[in-house]
Image 1 (tube, helix red, strand yellow):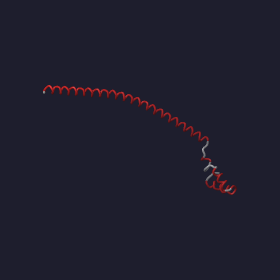
Image 2 (tube, one colour):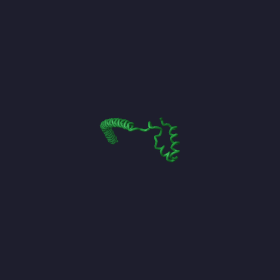
Image 3 (tube, helix red, strand yellow):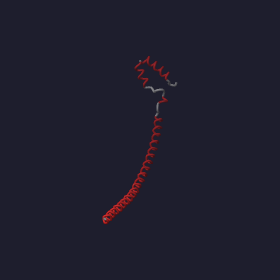
Image 4 (cartoon, rainbow, N blue to C red):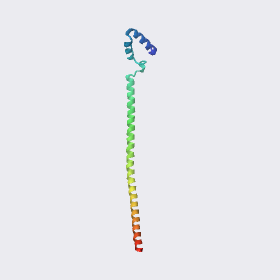
Length: 117
């Protein structure tokens, strides 16, 4: 016999006559909601656990892959920082020498102008 809402109600009415309203309500609260098909079995839980363990293992693999990519990117950034540092040093050296050249030229022009007067 399939358990549905009608059969549950009939059971409730019959028990209510024998046990009373309060005891019948307590007893009915302990019954499964619609039928035993809606209740998880140990097999269901074991299958769900295996599925979750598989997904966790997959996520661990993806996390390890991401870590590897991040380590690679970090190495690239260190290399870029080194290259940038060399380029920056060259640029600073060029600017300093250009400024010194301009300063000496300005001093030479000032002495030359002073000699003319």
